[in-house]
Length: 165
Length: 189
Image 1 (tube, rainbow over the protein chains, first blue to last red):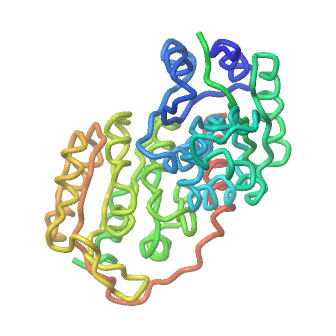
Image 2: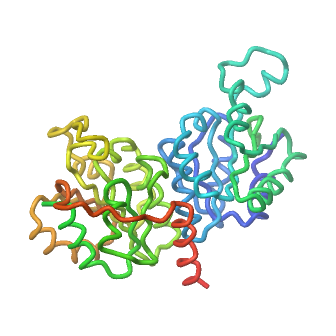
């Protein structure tokens, strides 16, 4: 079980000011919960690559953004991830919906190849990552945020399951 | 119009606005401005300057953010027009320098040359104000009013290449981003 409430608590603990995101199938309940949060700015984008550039602008303006996208969108975002989050050495927490992870973990054939390429891609970019599967894993979100600040690079929290109410 | 004339006019009317540039403009704007509040983005991911400007505009609501984009760059990321119009920062003005070619790669025509209309796209996306200029005198006359508008606003300037080489040495992008962040957070402190 992974509840939006526990994730939002972690984001507040990190001092996150803005969530830049594009909805995915893992995050419906997160969307509903975040809409109710008055302390977080909420910036929707039309394509995931925009999220990295918007986050860069927020950071240059002194804010502390997090991006929330799916692994498929991460693949789409290659050049802007290179040019902004990595190029600017942005201490950015990336929350990535990990489509296909549970099937892959169970040894089943995933719906598509998204899960297969996720960790190899992150390794290629040199982006550390952490798996978030249940509420018990959510402290890793704050740890990932702290790691991003320490190494001045993006760090990914991989959301491995759909959020539940 | 020539691009250098447009930039010179912009520099004349600019006061404390943040100015973000990319591609050819990023190499030429420093010939007209050396401000702590300039960000000349080279290599940040082509097409994504307007999104950076959106983030900056949200982070700094008390400052106007002027984004100087190219037409080829705009074509790479048209969806951001909708993203900007949705969040609708009142302090954002997006300029597109339309020369109808990919200048830095040798002058190949952009797709939609002579048919696509950027100001119409911005209007359709939901921008509060859109403008289009082909004459320098009209741009010079209207720009002070545009800078005072509640945005987001969109401005197409039909401008060919500059009359002379204006290449300047830009800061590496990481240093430029950190310099701007330092300047902005110093003000906030």
